[in-house]
Image 1 (spheres, helix red, strand yellow):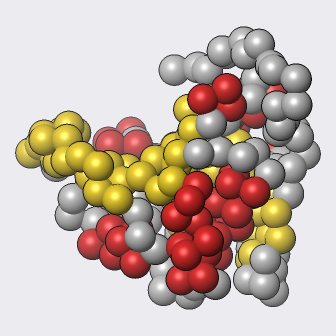
Image 2: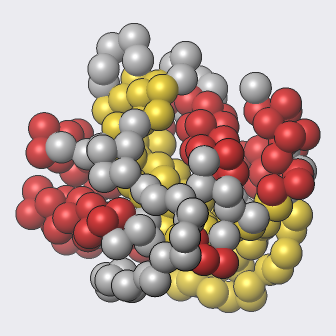
Length: 207
């Protein structure tokens, strides 16, 4: 699946740099380079890390190949060039270790909306990194891109993700019944939304 939407920009509409970086106290969010591919290959192939996304992990084929990682990153880079995606590799500030990926897809700048997602390697769960990635990305989206609406999707069984979304005040917009088939059964998908007027309060809860 590729995103090659050509947008007709209005005067004054913000644009997304190809070399965008965001920096926090725990992490640096950077554009992916080839040096990141082996770490991303391990993360995307890890059954524990991909517990809520096992359909993406290629487990039956033995996990991701480096070529598949390269194609995935090229796809995201093309989306960023076309202003429809933003992809970051998460680097732990203290060690420089790659901890995962995060960013936005389905960006529609004319309509001021996007969908946020994150894949964080399990050794970094409960470290505060996921929270900081959400903070950095949403602050950029609302403050710099002037987005109005950001969507988050996760399985209804993902209690940690849903807990963070509900803590920052995201609205449960829908439960998509039996949307994904995984591990022999259908999974329900929870769709949350956060609006720009909610961000000041959500920002304080994430800080």
